[in-house]
Amino acid sequence: MPETSIEEDNADFALDFLQAEAVYSPGFKSGVGSSIYFTDMLSDQHLVVSLSNTARSWSELLKRMNAGVAYYNLSRRVNYGLGAFHYYYDYYDAFGYYKYTEHLYGGSGTVIIPVNRFYRFEVGTMIYRLHRRDDIEKLNTNITSNYVSFVKDTSLWVSTGPIEGARYNITIGNNMDINKWKKRYMVYSFDFRKYFRLSRMSAYAVRAIFLANNGDDAETIYFGGSLGMRGYKFYEFSGKKLFLVNQEVRFPIIDEIHLRLPFGDTSLGTIRGALFIDVGSAWDDKISKLKGSFGLGLRWSLGGFVVFRLDIAKKTDFHSISEDTPIRFFIGYDY
Image 1 (spheres, rainbow, N blue to C red):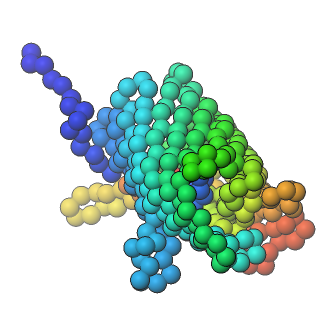
Image 2: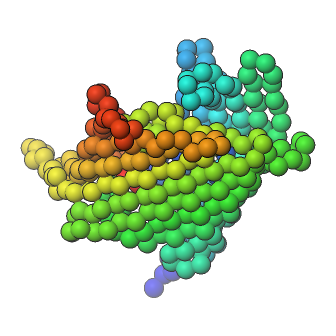
């Protein structure tokens, strides 16, 4: 019988899934955008492309194009990843006043060391050029950001996200100015997620997050929006520290939609719902008052690689409920 082999160097990548994102990278930045994931046939090699834009006019379209590309190789027990990025952002304080503009570009590396099937360590580093300016002064320097994480993942997924198991991530890192060889700040992160299955296709999901940047030059953390505090805008909360709890009951609405056509049948995916309650706060020195939201979410999984999300929310400060009812559209899987 002839021998067969798979050539790793000639992997053919195909679209795996795409989603919009609201992310926080340890010791780096928080932001929003979209990501496209490609994998090879055996899912040993991953290619991730992230895109967003902060242009306010056509003349700034290329200058303010935010892009990142990352390659991950999972074909061996010890996995690794390499990446490059370019970002251009404006930052504002809690009252919406302009603080400063940042332009940065550089590269990253990650090593993933599994302990067993469900536990792993991740070690990462980023080196980038930072240009920051405000109305008074400018800063041009080179930065390195390093972190180590301990991760557990026993989650079981359906088409829109996890439905059973647990996930958590404990991270510690630092951010340093290479030119001055000075530590700018430390990073502490705890992310816990638990899924309690209620029936074959329904579950109660809870997520608790604590993030803190501690130091004289600590960066501000921003959050809100569909993957944070639903009903609020993404940049509505900001501070050096962040606390967030999400709870929701996930349930099926339409198991699968089939469309019968003259030339064959096609599937239009599944529709699932969620009743949610979010509670959180962001602060610098003294913890601020908690804010919250509650409402109904709809998730439409289409084609196995994209999930459309619609969240209808009411906001509250736990003394009163907002008169408006924000409706947010997003693309991405459940937390």
